[in-house]
Structure formats: C-alpha cells, structure tokens
Length: 303
Image 1 (tube, rainbow, N blue to C red):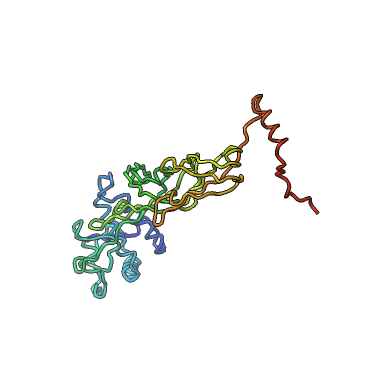
Image 2 (cartoon, one colour):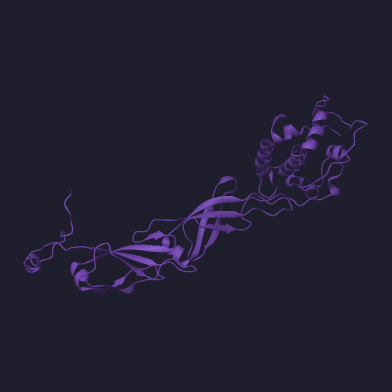
C-alpha cells in the first residue's frame, strides 16, 4: 500500500491549527459532496477528505500520524507500519462527519494504522445551518401567505416559504432540512430566515402594534365625527370626540398584527385646515369675529 499525505489532501500545512483544518474540511466537503457536486471524481475526493479529517481532527491520531510522517515517508511510496506499531486505544467517536460504510470504508493505509473503521459506526453530525434575510410587506405579515425566495452561494436554489400570520420584525422562520447537506447518512442542516418588514405607505409598526396618522378637518375636531379609518383588515368605524386636539391618540383594540394577544392600532389625529378660497374666506372671517378662542393662550414668554 501507499503512504498518504493527509495534509496535502486537506490543502493545509503540517502546522495548521484545529480551526484551519476544520474550515478547510467544511469548504472542500461542500465542494465535493456527492449529492451536490458536479466534479467527476467527487465521490472519491469526498471519501479522501473524510479519511484525512478523521486523522487530523483527532489530536492522538494526528500525533501518531505525524511521527510516521517525520520518519521521511513520502506520498505514494510503498509503506508498511513499523513492527512495534499498534492501533490499540484509538476510538472513532463522531467520525469527523464521515461514515466509512457509506462510501466503501477507509483505505488500507488508514486501517493499517488505526484499525477498521467498521468497529464503531458513529452518528454523523448534521449539515451546517444557514441564515438568510427575507423581506415581507406588512399585508403579508398580517394575513400570512407564501413567498418564493432565491438563495445564492454554493447551492443556488429557489424555495417556497410559508409566512405565518402575525410575523413581526426580527422574527426567525425555520425551514427544517433546507440548510447545507450533511455527510452521507446524516441529515442536512436547517435554514433560518430573519424577517424584515418593508416600510409601508400608510402604517408604521411597533412590535405587534400599528401606528396611523389620521388627517381630520377642523370641524370634525371641534364637533366630533364618526369616520371610517383604514386598518390592515379593512376600514372600520371610529368616533372622533368633540374638542379633539391635533396629536391626540385614539386606540382601536386588537386591530394590530395577530398574536396572543393581538396588537392594537393607535390613531394619531392631525388637524388639517382647508385653504381659504373665495367661497370659504368669508366663513373663516366670520368665525374669527365670533370666536374668542386663542390657540396661544398657554404659551408663556421666556423668562
């Protein structure tokens, strides 16, 4: 059998740290995973990577391998373990994300050093979880629905996402099994979508509560009125109390985003005066003459 250079297989230097080795394995495993790779030798390369990572990730196996490597053995040359070599004591805990049985077992070189990998089949770790952002309009956040999203990166794809009614800013939607594929025999990771609510032309949102600025006429503020107010579920009737002031807030209970409990809708009144036209100017002048109202009566001069 031939001596194997596991560092060359992983594309790392012999003095690479554990984090660098783990990062290299994840990068190459994504590239050569047989389920997603278009490389003609993907399965063989993936098997070699799993074997190399099984050795280099484990401090005891790596130290034993390094002792042999420092003995002058070169990749590809004929190799036999030293007479005093023993594989006793080596264990296979999590397999580095690789199952030897899935792709035909480890090489003779590996088994001559560390024994058969079939002695203890570990449970392979699942694939890596992924995160992405999803932008949702307020109407969809209120009523729920379905959205198709496109994901780029190493696995460009489109997914249909179910949006639950009442989802709020920063909420995380989990798509089970839609993350990175796991090693053969292991489940894939999950995909987590961070919700971002798009700005709305009419409403503002605070958690589950909805805010609306409602323009009203001066006579509606003075005399009171029953008007229709837009909400996310459609227009509803609301009473403006007589003597209402600009900036006053009224509440429509339960008219915010759905939830347990649902949010409310807060309506902030804004008095808007119509322009003085040829027809309305005399009325404004008549009102000025008849009214003693001073909107600045409580305005104090600076000391």
